[in-house]
Length: 211
Image 1: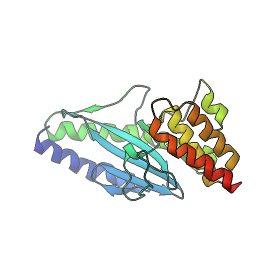
Image 2: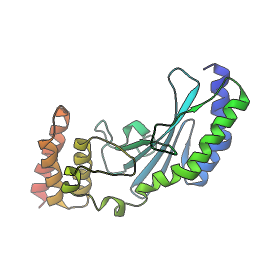
Image 3: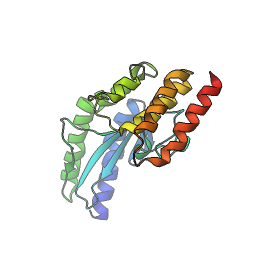
Image 4: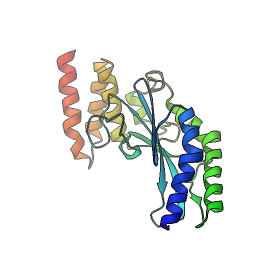
């Protein structure tokens, strides 16, 4: 992608997509925008294809009191989509969706306009999978994570990350018994994610002291 095309794309995001996001309660600039609703954080990120000529829109969801995906306390003002525990690609179907464009204003404007239609028709609803905390997280228990069918509206993470996420959520809610159940399940399925062991063990230890 040429520098001129990059600049045109950035301007189109700024001029015709960012105002829509801001009207929906998002703040941000450039390619990343964030919306905070109480403890809930929504992230929208526009990702360039590495070789240029295409872009996609990534959606992320996290909670303010959770660790981010690399184990640090969430920075609400700067969290990016890769650091969110719940992530997905915005799409109007079930497949990965990218918008292609050529090296000219007309093509880039059309691609961004088409993307905006998908945001308005699908992206908003996809983010609303997690509309409220704690209501939209309350139905999950350990048996749900053990089941063959886990559905978070297209948002995805590994099963062991889900175990950690919901252990931390239940600990925050002072539901120590369920927090321990999630943490113990996480240890059972740890596999190669050995770096998470210390977090599960700490949750179990802290929750037992708090009971």
